[in-house]
Image (cartoon, rainbow, N blue to C red):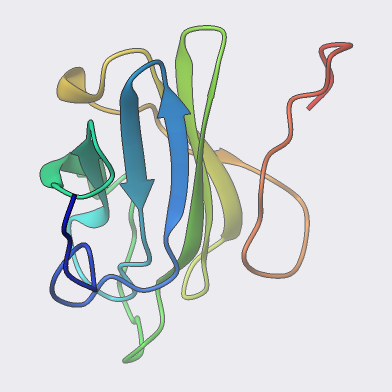
Length: 131
């Protein structure tokens, strides 16, 4: 199968990918742009379509006073027991948070803020049920 690099054209930095059955999902940084954190879907890792966005409400994405290249940094997408999780950092807001959904077309939850410094968070679901 032939493909072109980049696999998703345009400005899509800091990708994170997860697989759910035969489906693949990629999210990437959206910085100061709204809506935030685009989600792309593929079945073959070559042809990608924009599925939607994780952060579509002002309550999920406060960008007031956001500086250029501020905002949302390096999101991570994971799937665990029927639920999609996305974690990221709003560098112009409250910091690290997690949102989740069982159906991307119906939207994502309100942020659960994580009291942890730094940027570029990730999630690991361990076999014993810890995160």
